[in-house]
Length: 444
Image (tube, rainbow, N blue to C red; front, side, top):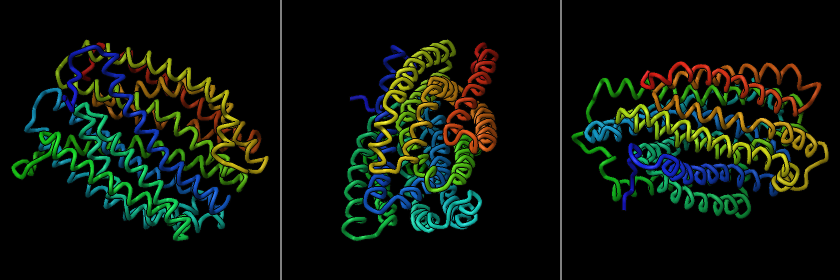
C-alpha cells in the first residue's frame, strides 16, 4: 500500500479530492473539539460560561493558528523536497523544523501566559466572563507544546501527500476528548478547567500515536542522528516560510479578536450568539481550509518537480471545485441557520437567538467568495509566495474591523457578517489581479 502520494503525475481532480476529503473530515473533527467543549459548558455549567468559551476560543485560536501557520510553512518545504525526491534534505528539514517549531512554541506559550490579563482587558471582556476565560486558557497555554507536536507530525505527512493517517488519529483523540470532557466536568466537577485538561491530554495522545505511526509506516520522513545537523539555507527557508505563514494565520485571528472586542460591547446577549455562529462557521470553513491545503500541497510538489503547466491546471481545477462547493454551502447555511443555532445553543433567550440568526442569514450569502479566496491562498502558498496571503489578510481585517466598529450599534451582529463579506470580496479581487500577473511565471 502506498502510504504517501506522488502528485506530480496522474488525474488532477482525483488527486485533489483524495487529498482534500481526509482534510475535510479532519478539520470537522478539530472543530468538534471546540464544539464538544462548548456543548458541555453551555449545558452543564451555564450561559455565562458558554460566553466565556467563545471569548476563550477567540484568544486561544490566536496561538493555535500561529502554530498551524508555522506547520503549513513546514508542509510546503516537505512537499517541494518530496516532489524533488531529495530524501536527505527532507529528513534534515524534519529535524530543523521540529527544533525551530518546538522552541517557537515554548516562547509562544510563555508570551500567552504573560499577556493574558492585559489582552482580556484590551478586548473589553466582561468581569463575570473573564474569570472563566483565565481558568481555561492558563491550562491550554501550558499544553501548547503537545499541540505543536501533533501539528508538526500531520504537516510532515501532509507534505508527502498522506492526509489519511492524521484523520484516523484525530478521530481517536476526539473520542478520548469527549470522554474526558464529561468525566472531568460531570464526575470530577472541574468546570471549565476540566474541558481544558481534556483538550491537552487528547492532543498529547494524538501526538504520540502520530509519531509511532510515522516511525513504523513512513520512516523516510523522520530524521536520524546523522540528519541532526545545521543546514543554513534550509534553516533560513524554514524560518521564512514558517514565520510568514504563522503571521498570516495570526493576523487573521488578530482581526477576529478585534471583532470580538466589538461584539463584547454588545453585552452577554450578543457574545453567546457570536460564539454559536463562530462554531457553525468553523464547520463551513473546514471545507474551504481543506481545499486550500490540498491546492497548496499539489502546487508545492509540482513546483519541486518543475511542472509549471501542471501547477496551473491543478489550480484552475481546484478553483472550479471550490466555487461549486462554496455555492452549495452558502445555500445550505442560509436554509438551516435557525435550526443549527438552536441545536448548538439549546434553550437560549430570544434576543440571543435573533442575533445569531441575523448573522447567519447575512454571512451565508458571501461564502462563495470565502472559498474562492481560499483557493488563491493555497496557490500562492504552494508557490512559496506566502507574503501574498498575508497582504490579503491585512486587507480583509482592515475592512472587517472598520465596518464592524462603525456600524454594529446600528445593525447589530449582522454588521459583522456584512463586514466580513465585504472583506472577502476585496481580497478575491486583489488575488485575481495578482494571479493574472504571475501565471506566466509560476516560480516567481
